[in-house]
Image 1 (cartoon, rainbow, N blue to C red):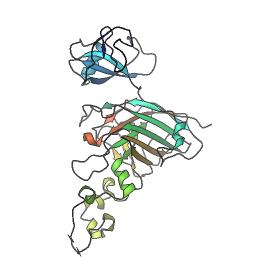
Image 2 (cartoon, rainbow, N blue to C red):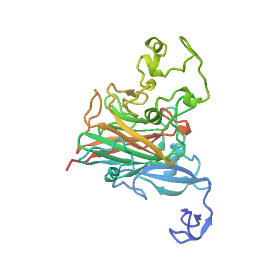
Image 3 (tube, one colour):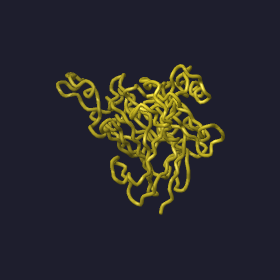
Image 4 (cartoon, rainbow, N blue to C red):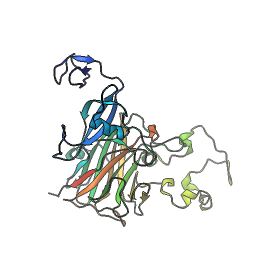
Length: 355
């Protein structure tokens, strides 16, 4: 319902507004348009704390206010007016809690994660560089972090009713998530040449390869048959790991060691470096770890790495210090890939000092 006086909405309860007591004017818009505004305190003035993201709802027939105009400029609900506002989580302000034990890198559901403070962070579509994403996939994700003085682990959770973990066909796209961190002066747009950032990227198809073996054509076309592979006549199609060296030369990506073409993966998490949009590249030392699991329409993923840097340009982390931090989520069902993703605002990561 929508209030006749304050224009706020509610979905359960009586016919009177639970905020001001006025009667309802009409049912709430069944097809609301939502957007995000970055601002300070309600009512204007200089904010006294960190920026706050507010999720705002729009409907036709009302005048554009200042905050609504900001949304229109961002591509949300152009020409519509502000109806009501629903606060959401702020930009990431993540504390990596110190624990004096091994981290549950391979268990997203370990009770040890209860020691880490959880923060639900708003997501927004990436519309800075092509390919754009017009609307966010999940509205938010939950972030936790732990470290033990040697290693740091992040746990991300988000809703996704479709489990997309194959990338064999050209129209298949995977679910994925990532965290990036860099120096306190690192910029939001994937770092810069002067201030690169480190990215940990978990991929659902890599997790599938590790859990169930390399997913090849048979996974996409289970009824296909292969009856002739010179010089292997009358035998089953060989697995990629069994290809003789001379056959590998005819598979360029596999022959040159392209990380996207590997058939044996030590980890579902890739460690990368970025120095601006379109510059992301895999690092020489692939020592990131993690695991992802999908249950009841929800992904829960752990991404981990040593605090110390192992490659040139990689961001080293130290307890007691703060770093630039952001997250991203890809929905395979929405054809997300590359820059087409849902992202958080740039926030901070602080590592608690060991006790």
